[in-house]
Length: 185
Image (tube, rainbow, N blue to C red; front, side, top):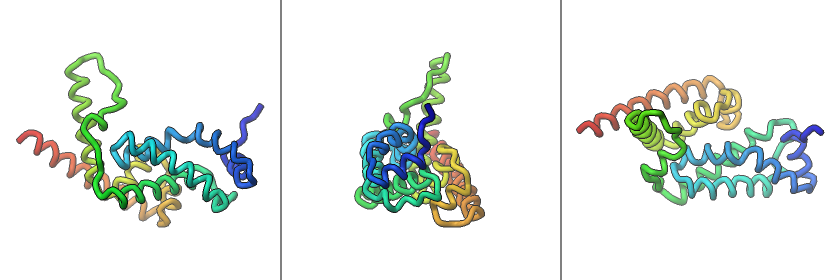
C-alpha cells in the first residue's frame, strides 16, 4: 500500500484530520531537530524547539499552501521558532560536551580524540557566526537544501543565497582559524 505524501497528509490535516501530523512528525522530526541543534548548540533546547515547530504547524495549518512542498514550510516554522528562542534567550547556552555528540569512533584513540576536538571546534566556530550566516550554512551544508528552497525560505533570490553562503563560509573559516590560534596560545 502506498504511503500518502507529505502534501496529501498536510491537506488532510488542514481538513481536520490532525492524526496526519503524527506521521509528518515521524518523517521529519530528526531533520528539524538537527537543524535546531545546529542553530542553538543545545540538545535540550532543540528538543523543545522541535515540539514547538510541530505545534505551530498544527496551529497554523491553514497557512500552508497546497501548491508548495511541505518541508520548506516546516523549515520556515522551525526557523521562526529558533529566532523566537534567540530573542528570548539573548545568550546561547551550550557546553563543549553538547557539541561532541554523535561522532563515530575511529580505530585509533588518538585519531578519535583529534577528530572530536576538531568537530567541537568547528561547531563552536559555527555557533559564533551571526544567526543569519549560521542559518544559510546549516541549510545548505548540513541539511542539504537546494539554493532555490533556501531562497524561498529566506525570501530572497538564489543569487543572494549563493553570496550569503560564500560569505558565511569565509567567516566560518576565519573564525575557525582564530579559534585554532587561541588554542595554541
